[in-house]
Length: 103
Image (tube, rainbow, N blue to C red; front, side, top):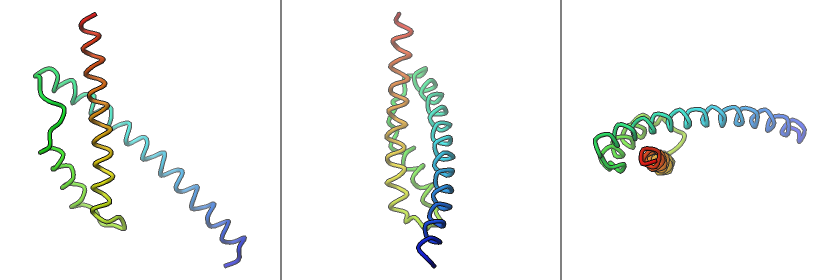
């Protein structure tokens, strides 16, 4: 492979990565919208945001379906971060809703 061919291949791969990143972003935002709905349900019955058992179920689900090349521990770390951010979305939504209701 020549240097020019390598650069062309890299550009093609980067276009694919950019497309995948946008698809992942859309999915993360869809997940966040569902999390806001979950927050509404939890708030209506005064349930806590943090549910370690449910988080363990999420980890088990994604890790058991992982076919690689990511290793399962990497998948778990990614989902730990996603869940942490989703808890923040839920917490922010619940706090905003409380302020709206008290106004």
